[in-house]
Image (tube, rainbow, N blue to C red; front, side):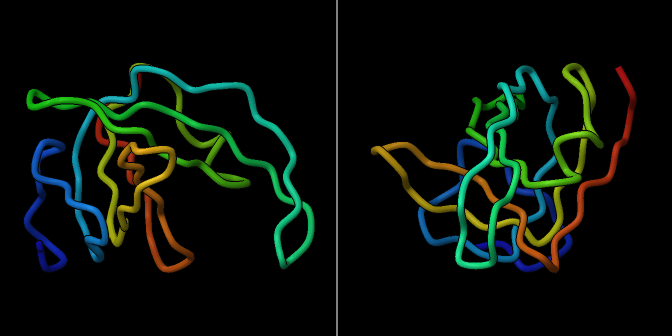
Length: 104
């Protein structure tokens, strides 16, 4: 597990990891859809984050969807990993942050 700060590689992301910092390139962003959460309706889209070790699904919520574009290199801070449909997924919690390092 990585403590906030030093980035982990995609290949090293394990289910249940928290407080992750991950740097990679956005290679895909799916169509945004509206889902019902316990807090009410919310927009969500699934993206793909890639580095030299592999790729991982990335769930983007609300304003995160509009902030990044395919081809951007980003740094995710305070991300967490969980498994959905037998696939690792990254999520950025309410305390997390997406920083664009290079714009596509």
